[in-house]
Structure formats: structure tokens, C-alpha cells
Image 1 (tube, rainbow, N blue to C red):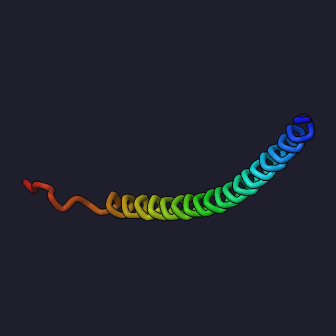
Image 2 (image 1 turned 30 degrees about the horizontal axis):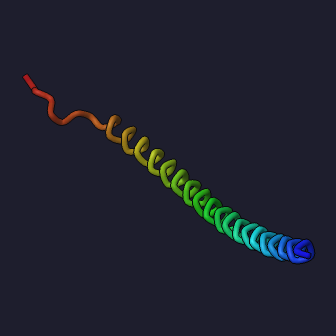
Image 3 (image 1 turned 135 degrees about the vertical axis):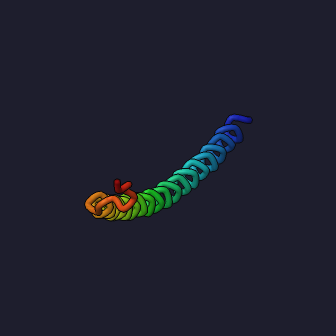
Length: 78
């Protein structure tokens, strides 16, 4: 007598659990999409930083070469 009730209860519980699993998968896909956007933005920021650092390094080397090519004005004359 209770067998149909138990079967329908189990069926209802299974449907609810399936709905929860589908909802969680959709949330996970949303998080993964947001994560990919953030990773792309961070990668672009790192590229910009690398380019800026490279430019600053070239400027620093150029300035170093110009300073080294100047004669020293603090010489003692005898």
C-alpha cells in the first residue's frame, strides 16, 4: 500500500535533486565565464606592464650611456 507513495516520493526527490544539479552547473558555467574574462583582463594588464617595463629599461640604458659618455668634471688639476 505504501509502495506507490514511496515510489512517487522518490521520483519527486529525484526531480528536485536533478533541478539542483542543473542549477549548480549553470552557476558553475557563469563563474567560469567570469573567471575567463578576469584572466583575459589580467593577461592584458601584464602585457601592458611588460611593454612599459621594456620601454623604461631602454630609456634607462640610454640615459646610462649618455652619462657614461660625459667627461668627469670633478677632476683635480695639479
